[in-house]
Length: 182
Image (cartoon, rainbow, N blue to C red):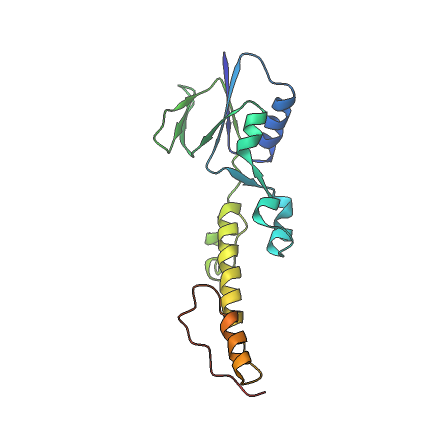
């Protein structure tokens, strides 16, 4: 039995798995190794950042795709490759994965931190998983800032209820600002 290991859930491996689902090879064990279950479709990231798409709209769920392609899915990172023994060493402490053929499609991560000012003033898109987490934090902080800086235009009890209701979840213990007369 031949052993094919697909290292990384990038676009190329997604297409390989899709095609394997249509015509599975005989006598071949295929394993996809990826640190996460979801892989981004980078062409939709601008729409994600603009709020047109949610996380699941622009990510491919590798688990059902692997089932379709009859591919074993292992959620871990490669810690190393031993080309002599033809083995992928994994960070999860599980058994190493032997291979006859190894395909690597893990994506590039630019060294943006080496560019002066980047860490303080820029948000690199790659790795995409870090971009998505950082973008969610930025969106949450912007929403909290916006809600906390709103001013009520009237001073009646309904205005105070409206302001209190605009506080984001988890901020219930904060007292609304004194209403500003408008």
